[in-house]
Image 1 (tube, rainbow, N blue to C red):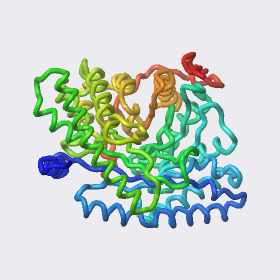
Image 2: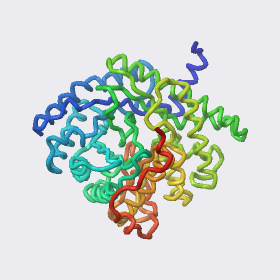
Image 3: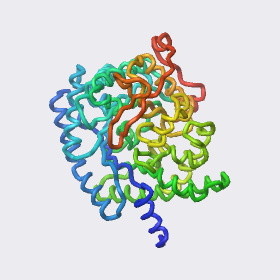
Length: 454
């Protein structure tokens, strides 16, 4: 039974500690929209999204009003477009026309982002995959709400280094085409190793081919709630610290479970998963870095940070999995720079470097996320950074991701500003030494020996 203390506790979390449901994401399969005629396919895509998701926004707002729980974002993910457009798209411009259709559909139903302008190329690229990847810079420059992702590697297949090289060039070109708006196109582009099929968070959300026709996935958050809980056990043992995080994660996830079940029932759409990640925002008091500091490091990036993050990530998962039967997506702690006020503070203080963030990747949800780098960083260097992250994911059998923003015309010490949930970030230094000969090799890095588990 729920008692009045728990009700009051949840109210306090919402009103004072930035508890929210970060996103309700409706996954929509577009496999039945495939057509060899581009115009017909675009019409089918637009019609399916706008009809299937027509009630997503009203239902989300209805749940917010009835339960008093903020639902920050309502989003859509679709089947990777490289799979959908393969039959009809013969040029880069053909794929860009699909991006335009997706953007119009997202605006029609009122969602803030639509993910799935994606390709899955961990073992090789089809002609459609390569065309889509080459179309990404123009697609993201011409649209407002479309997000793009590419999966470049996996523990089972290794790393597609030809695609890694191409994505370095793609990130660079995307930044150049959106330089008038602080290179925001790159904030909507993420590359993965071991990408999950059911991730509700942008920019990496897509509706995997293992998913049903339509599904509701919910991403919860709550760094502020965890930080507040830890303040009450300051100086206590690790056992007390871990128990506090677990109990708090359980409570946060139960809120997400309630919203997911209600959204599923009211939309008459199957419930998929809860992603129990701690996702920060630029708002003060809603920071993963602040949690790490509360655990005991002076700044995120100080010695001990990776251990503290490992502890946090594990306890969040242990608490969250008890609160929902269906946990998926990324689930853990995000460490984006631009979207976390504490991470920005640590970067400005010199405590947080690209190399330390890479080390932290080994124990958190994703990886090098929303990091601004100098605009003159070469495409090969960007590819090298991507390759390092892909290797961490492949060997550690986990999801890793890279979202870099080469800030055209800016150098270390300058900053980029996106506003809203994307925030802003200081431009961080990059190792100046070259990896061009390494990135210039063709083929793929084989899967590690521990991938052979059948």
